[in-house]
Amino acid sequence: MTQHTATPSDPTPPSLSAGSPFASWKGDHAGIRVTDFEQAAAWYREKLDFRVSPGLPLGEKTLAFLSPAQDDGFRIEFIAGPGCTVSRPAFEQLLDTHEVAGWHHVCFRVNDLAASVTALRERGVRIVSEPRDVPPLGLRFAFFCDPWGNLFELLEPLAATER
View 1 (spheres, helix red, strand yellow):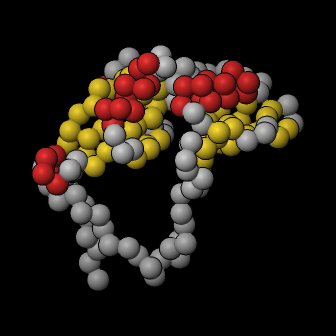
View 2 (cartoon, one colour; view 1 turned 90 degrees about the horizontal axis):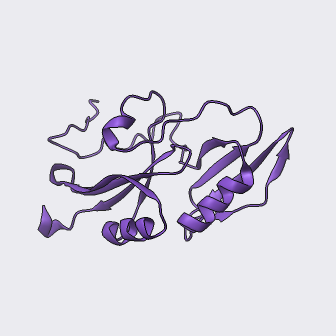
């Protein structure tokens, strides 16, 4: 059986693979390493309204989970404490992010991209890429980053009439 592969001209995702030994996998969380738990937790609470679980000791470090305001299905894991000595760059524009290998960003689907970006700006969050439309994919997106250079995408489906 030939599996469909999505292309830029045909963004239809490949069909589900129920026969895969990994069929039960679902996204749960992404981990972020920070030096100062209290400082990072405060930024995510104040700027993004994330809910922060109580920190658990992990040797000299602290482990905690962050959840968006209304979503318990995906979390960000903080591992905070000593030993984190290499910082990601503070990105000024999206093209700068393409020079860094490894995980690029975490994406959150939103109902109103413009309103989300406006609220982030009002809270002093650095917008790395202004909202832009990608009609072939039926999406509108923008990027922002936290003070530690961790990059986040906001994604909104374009209305059918806008395509």
